[in-house]
Structure formats: C-alpha cells, structure tokens
Amino acid sequence: MELLVISDTHGRIEPISAVIDRMGDIDMLIHLGDYEQDAEILAERHGLDLVSVPGNMDGCMRLAESEKILETEYGRILLTHGHLRDARWSEDRLVYAAMEKDCKAVFFGHTHCSLYEQSPEGITLLNPGSTSLPRDGNPPSYAIVHTSEERLECGIRYIRNEGGSEGGTGGKKKYPHGRLRDMLNYSDRF
Image (cartoon, rainbow, N blue to C red; front, side, top):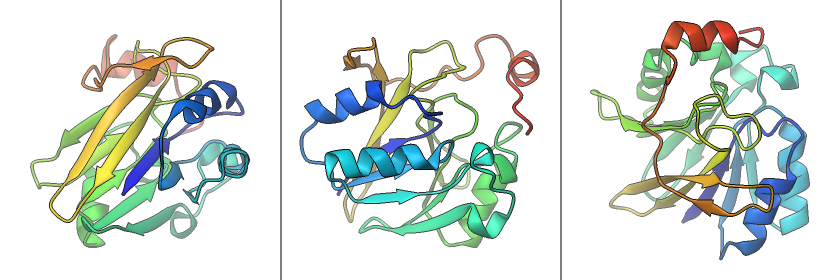
C-alpha cells in the first residue's frame, strides 16, 4: 500500500496539489490535522481515498475524536494530530498511546517539524512536517509511506518551490535553533 501523509496545510494546498498531480498511484491520502477541510478538497480534486484527523486549529479538544487507527497489512498505525498528546514537548505520550492501542507506528503532526525515527520501544514515529508553514528550517514537506506485511518504509519529501518540485528524504534535523526557543517562538495555543 502506498500512502501520502500530510499535515498542517493551514489552507495552503496548491503546492501539495501540484505534487499530487505528478505522483503515480497513491492508495490513500492521510491528513493529520490543521485544516481537515483541506484534506477533503485534495481527496475530491485528485480522486483519492482519505483518512484524516482533526487538529487544534480544527477546534478538536477531545482525545477520542482526535485519533484514528489505520489497519494496514504491516499492522496498526495510530493517526493523530498530536496536540492532545503534547507532541510539541515530547514523543513519549505518542509512543505510549501507540503501545496501548497495539500499534506498530504513530503518525502525527502539530509541530510543523518533519521527523522519522524508531523509538527505543520499537514504535515508528512519523511526522511529515508541514506542507505550508515548516518550523524546522527545511522547505515545506510531506511523507510517502509504503507498507507491506514485512515492513513499513517512510520517506520525508520536500516541496522546493511554489511549482511543487520535490526532493530529499531527510527528517532528522528536528530543532535547529534549540528546542525551548522553537517552542516559545512557534506556540499556537498548545
């Protein structure tokens, strides 16, 4: 299965729409919140199956509404925006939630910083960053995920300009100016 994972579009969908126009077959679009209505527009425009979760800017303040489980051939994946699991401060609560729900991975947004890593507990953490307002010193980003029975392969991709050109597979540069400075400079209610 091939998944396009995006988050934090904040009403700016044209660059990622241009990327989708050039992509091959995508089995599903996953939108991890802020603005969930952007996901609906993109899915309809490009004829994609959609799974989305609301974020803080969508007015979601109830944990039960902010998370979904995606069943794949690889295993269960927890989808959440992350604001109600304190993703900006630490990934620990995301990892624990994934473990409690018997998930092998957790996909989240909210921080606007791309991330792809394995937790010490063996949970895959993926944050595609933001397609519109990145906060990690990188260009706007999204993720491509391939699932199979044997494994989960993730890659962070960057939108290099308004025309939607792409490249790169990074995602390790998390807090270029220091974690506390980034949290204070980029707080948005949570």
